[in-house]
Image (tube, rainbow, N blue to C red; front, side, top):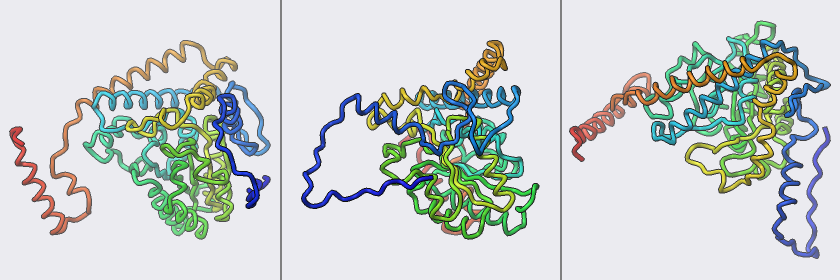
Length: 397
């Protein structure tokens, strides 16, 4: 793996730089040069649906298993699109789309064992799906009726973390606990995986998590979904090096995988988790993918990125490449694809009906979900809030 060339200052006598606006052809050429992920990218299924070899990673996949991965991605995308539509209709306060990142999440999620623990940010709807969390359990978070209704212990899936990068600290502490409890070092070992985006790598919490996990050999896979944009900030303005190379500075391995390739993501994540279970963690995975929708429904990506860039990434659609491969291998027919679409339609109807019928929570419930035990200050705040809220009874303001 070669080191990048170091930038050299032009000197005081150099001619001033010009700020000529690039032509459309130059912009497209630049996009094509930067959307491939580089020579170190692990890929097993091309955007054209062709299986390719990699010197270090491979995966034996049956027709049934690949059909299952395809089903996962289609259904998760439909959940995402339906929730997005519900927000546009005013039924959700906000939604965080995952469009384009289905392979990264389904591939990583299906690599987990039941006893492994996953720590998400706020976009990991696909990981939630693979951990058995019902899509309806996610809606209350974005409608403001609850904090998520799944049991983190049962599903081994932590509640969504809204504060950027904070879940890395939680995951690091949990993984350190696994190490201290002797739950690593053999075939039955446990591992933890933590999901975050490229923008989170600029947060101090992520740096601190890297340091502690490295020092204590925590069985932790750091899974960075580099979707190229931290809201409106492109990755090249966040880091001088590819993100996976940051792991070197902390003394543990880093690897970049095609995040739109569900097979490569599954293979790499399986390997990383097994390394952690054996006591060889931590490991950083950078899933090189693309956010094909807004950061959230309060965002307008057309204000800061080119439509040409989006069109290029549409050619790398994670679902379409699996569909093409299934057809080429004669592992699926039109009846199969139609059945998945019908199932997606049913899920969308269930999601819609559930959302519009969600009851508003009791006014004071928020105060009972902060601390395990109450205290006088919190109780006084609750009483003041309830008295204020009661003043609006009967529609009088």
